[in-house]
View 1 (spheres, rainbow, N blue to C red):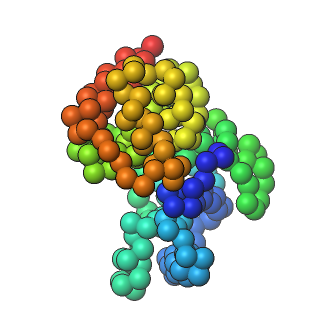
View 2 (cartoon, helix red, strand yellow):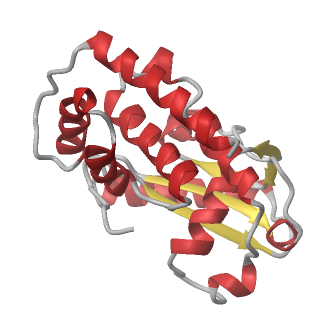
Length: 222
């Protein structure tokens, strides 16, 4: 989506398989990804979910996945030979499906729109809203993530635009009240590696969160 930042971004991969694979196969994939992360000295690494083709044809929400790996699971895969993340349902996958369908790139296989179908936008809204549900608890410690992701959600419910964090931050700078522009600009600059240290007011972050949730709810039901 034109905003990959090796210091801030992970590499998101969504893989589709026709049939279930063995747990051993999935663990080998996790180990290979870990080796690549270390070889390439990746800061954020990979995030990959593998899903069955049946769910790209007949969508289910929340969507079952066969296998998942990300930096959150890295230590567990390294230290526990029996660890495996898979066989669950994940509401985040609706957002991954929509982003892939509209703005994804094919690494291997069929064209995206031969594999995925468009899904009801209400699933996408629910998925991206669930991603920011912890904003009040998390925005002080992780302001860049929540400030820009709240902007992504609001941009979509207002204008049906599927955006990157960078695009949403730039939109928010022009569209949101002036009192939030310093906060947004700081987070956007940090996200783009143009700023070493954030200087943000905690009360303003919470105020921004409250404002954004009210706006998101207002536009979600229009």
